[in-house]
Length: 447
Image 1 (cartoon, rainbow, N blue to C red):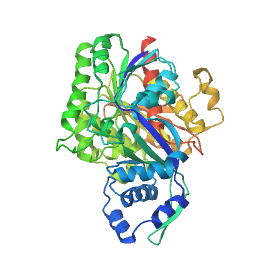
Image 2: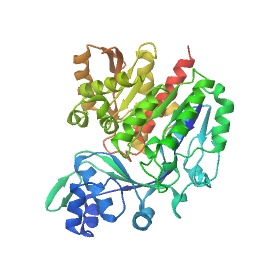
Image 3: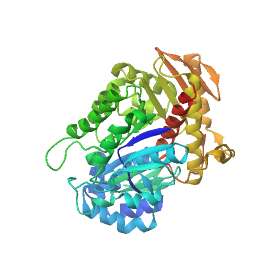
Image 4: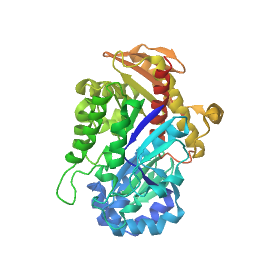
């Protein structure tokens, strides 16, 4: 398979945030300032109190999130306190997805190579990657440290405990909070080389997988907004479709700065691309499109999630949504765009790749994939949700999951394979989505 892959890549500095460590950070802050930030979350990081508030809020709920750093001082604090203790990994949705597809057997992955790609290359295990453009763009509005494009990923574990403003907190589930310092991917930079290569070779490609829209900012230092940058990328996707109408394009959604941005970009993309992937937090952000109660989505209730996905797809004309959670993966798709067998087999491959990566922190050789997850079990909660969904749609069992129909859409759901003590939760959604997409393309080529 030959795949185009854009747009964002960076370095992830992964650190395990324990109850003891967050307690130390809390002791550095003024209590009233922290109380104010917890009551009115800033959603961005301009001070240490902003950072700690973001960590506390997401650890309290066990939710994933990403806030951008707009302070060189905070970035230097994080780098000085944590960088040497971090596990340095390949980051960015595109970078992770390109690596997964190449490692798991893609013939060629053409990657939009932004930033200091020479520092990123050693972190990639996959071969057959074409790096289209290998320099920092000169027109990016970068601060002096931005060429490092480091995203601090704070993993936290289920059961971690700490005290905040006199209240005891026990983290309800493992997840991660990302503090992002990045002036390149926030521009949604597309290298001239990637533009040229994709335009010249799009008819040779089997598919395209795109991400990075969630890195866009509502406002930029020059007073402009996100729309011009989004439109440039969107026009590229439309251009690919014009040159190769049969090119399947999958977008991995991501967590946006604001619901308004998320809804607007989702709605625009839905009319151009073939499928969009997301997790439950990102689906929650699209409440304006689906109107499903947030508490049911947060609880990862499969019936509520199915209803929300179908409402999002039907209201925008999107052909397919792939929803990945800790406990199950779901695909809803319009008639004649796929088949239950193709969806289930491709999701099965994606789930196994993610489980193997969670357990070891690396991808296995493809020939050893089944053996690498043999000792792991299906999610018990995922199995319960599959049963609940089957009761709703009256679906049939297939390959460990269920498929059926709901409000004019085909539905496939599969429980995930769980690693109880994951090496990291970072990149699991990207791993599921890209491996699933790769296998989906392969199955299509077999007929």
